[in-house]
Image (cartoon, rainbow, N blue to C red):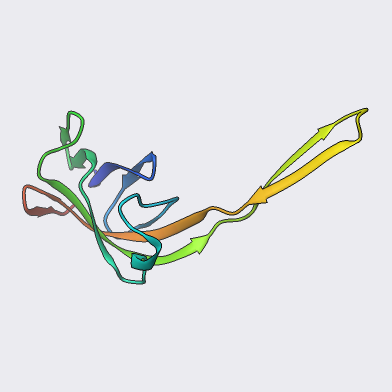
Length: 118
């Protein structure tokens, strides 16, 4: 039985555990100047927390629940290539883009001011 939380950030929901790192496409609250290494972050959009056999579910978020972490480094993902070709018209179009992502590590999960451990 492990301790984990489900958070909502970057337009997706993640199952996070203390001590592990995760990749997020974008943090809505942080600008690119503030994405330095070891910047501490607090995520308040916690949907659910599980500790041993207890499960706390929010509606939509848990009050008093915080996931604490720090940014390891920002990086750019692999290039996504969009290739459109219309046959018999000799029309080809090749586009691509690279999305900015951030890797962060979860330090602790807390509920009502108390850190939750395994």
